[in-house]
Image (cartoon, helix red, strand yellow):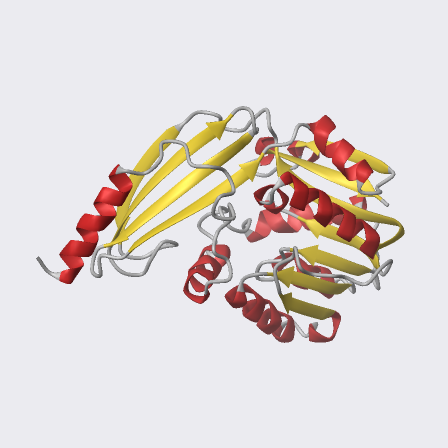
Length: 290
C-alpha cells in the first residue's frame, strides 16, 4: 500500500466514523478565510461573474449600492466602515463616489486585491484596507457616518460574538450614524437535512483532483444550519474537514440585539425592499440608526 493509498483509507474511515450531528461551533464554525491558498481560491470565486455565490454580479451590486446610498443617507466625504469587505468591490465603488472607506477582512488575497483595485481606480487615498479578523478589530470611537455588514457574514459568528460586533460597530458610529446588515430570511432558510458529493480538479476546495462530500444539518433548538465540508485530495490522500455554522435570527430577535447594542431605531427590509436581485427573497436587510 502506497502512502497516498494509506492516507485515503484513513480518510474514508474517518468519514465513516464521523459523528452524525457534530457540535456547532466546535471548530470555530467558519471558513478558513485566512489560509493563503483557500483565500486565493475564494478570491477567484468572488471575481467570477458567472455566479453570485461569493460576491454579487456587478449589475446587481450597483443596484444595491444605489439603494444603500439612499437608505444610509450617504454623501461625498462620509467615512464608512465595511466589515468583512472581501475584495473591496463595494468599498471601492463607494470611494469613487467620494467616501472614505475602512475595509476589514480576514482573507489575505482579498485584501491584497482590494488595495490593488483601489489603486487602479485612483481612490487609494480614500481607502484603507486592514487584514484582520473583524472580531479583533478595534475601530475609532464615533468616527464613522455609516457601516456595512453585508451578504450574511454576521450570521457566521456565535450569538455572543454577533452581539459584541454590533456593540463595537455601534461605538464606532457618529450620533445618527447608520448600519446596514444583510441576513438570510429565517422563513426562507432551508431547514432540511441534505447531503451531496462531486468531483473536480479546480474550484474552491482545491486545484488538483478531489472528491468533495457535503452535509447540511439543521439544529432546531439552536436555530442554525451547520454545513460539514469534507474534501479528499486524490493525488496526495490528504483529507480536510471544514464546518460552517449559519445562525438564524428572527426579525424580532435581531432587532432586539441591535437595540441592546445601542441602536435607537431598526428598520428591516425583507427581500431588499423588492429590488430586482436574483435571490432577493432570501434576504432581509436591516438599517439601524445609532
